[in-house]
Length: 299
Image (cartoon, rainbow, N blue to C red; front, side, top):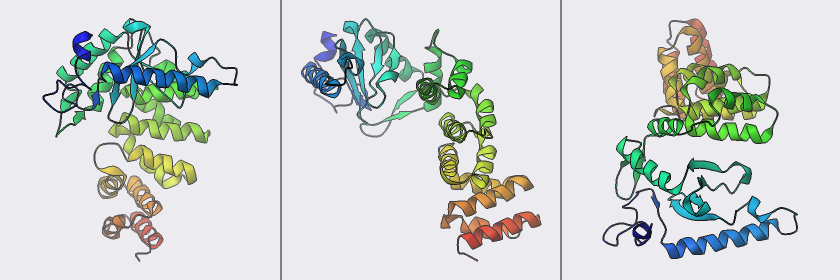
């Protein structure tokens, strides 16, 4: 511990500040102490007059040990012998336990580098392999709720458990949840099907693409935005790229849906693909492409 905190913000002084861990920093002890007192004071101010215990938003034994480039802060508990948690300022009831202890947290960082979850990228950056990282996180869960339990929480009536399930499925990307989540895209519950679409995007499994294409063609309003948000992060093609590929290579039904979905996007970059679809062998695809082009004002 002493050797670690002799570093200033994760640096020996001879290299860039992020050289120990490119996307984040171990703060100097002085900065960690300053952050600790700031958080404790903020917790007291936020809970003042509410009847809530200040420890419900920032416990007195939580000590900042790590901060990412995006501002996420990890805290050690019980002087390092308790769990390391990712501080959640929006939902204080759902602090993520990232490691069993401070020592375990450091071991995890080493393991993630060694197994390719973290790879040093360009200057002062780290490339994260989300699939490998999620796989390692799944292996560290022990007795915590598995995919079936999280799916039940997602479909349950408790808002806190629903939010917890969304958070954990997003972090852990269970491939075995792809099929059940695809099934939820047809749920009569609008909130549930929107969550399912976004979680499919977070998992990133290409099996979800044709189902999200259908959703983009058929959903409206907020549902449509969630379908887009689900399709966009899968692979590197983006939502428009997926739709164009399906319009070109999918079966007849999917090509019709892709043309309809491209019209719904109101994105002019889809015009060339739709113009090509006017010459599709299937008259239904031709008609859907014509309708989409009219909607885009490109007749």
